[in-house]
Length: 355
Image 1: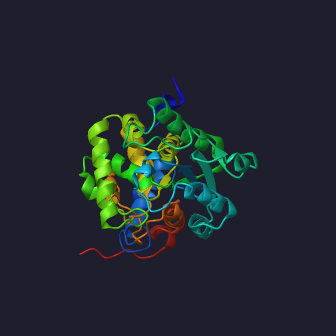
Image 2: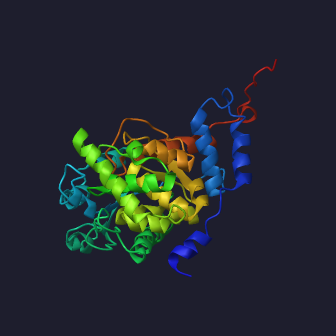
Image 3: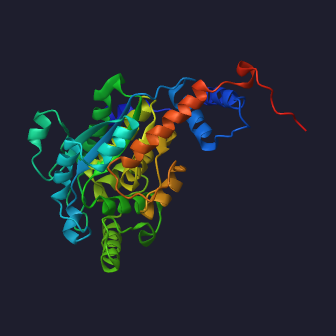
């Protein structure tokens, strides 16, 4: 049994008994019933995930997966591919959006080279990034499959290995991404796995104008028609139209689920990774917490397919894990509501009068 198969075999749904225990406690907190709304729903999820009424959430880590995409040769992005490597250096220097947001929530940021089309060996040797490079970017899926099936497995297993290497040092995982062209791959994955029309799930990414957006739609439609990814096989979809960093994100989701730890799924790219993960193991969705709804039109379709309602809607479209970092504060708030707010009996407070 390989690493992926072993990980999939270890994933089970949330524990219904722990969910019930959490709900019973939350039902009797010193406030009007369910007055904190979705924060209380989140607290129930945390209990079901962790099998505990004191779910650990203090140690937070955002795993930012980076990789390049051959489909950028089709003119689907306003930025050149070398921006991916440049941004990795920005993450390491602590000056990017994810660094600022992670500092707010007290989250550690780990950057993984999944397939950046540049030599980042010096950063890896210095321990500033994790080297899991599958190749120097994917192939152009407008001309053929983005990667081989073996590479797709390698990408997913790399994400699993990153989570496993962190051992018990993390309570809550967050996902992040960096890769010029990756909204095109995420669009193709979303259309393939949800059945949504390409035109309905294709966005402007880095700021495409109307003509460029129309071209991007045509590129994805042609690729899906030619490659015919199998929606019943997450690895087939990843291999034909995905990205190495998206595969790595899928691996993070699966490994977190196998370890019974919540994973905060960031934006559109991360949610495409979650779609792949849940195509491989539907029970993994029980461990996914949707951080936010981005401005990419494919994001709501992906959320609906996963049965998730995002915690935030701030009109963000950056990626990097920024939404996941901000949502970490809400996860901690939900845990504190479950563990720190007293019940009516504990506080000796009179309950509401019925009738």
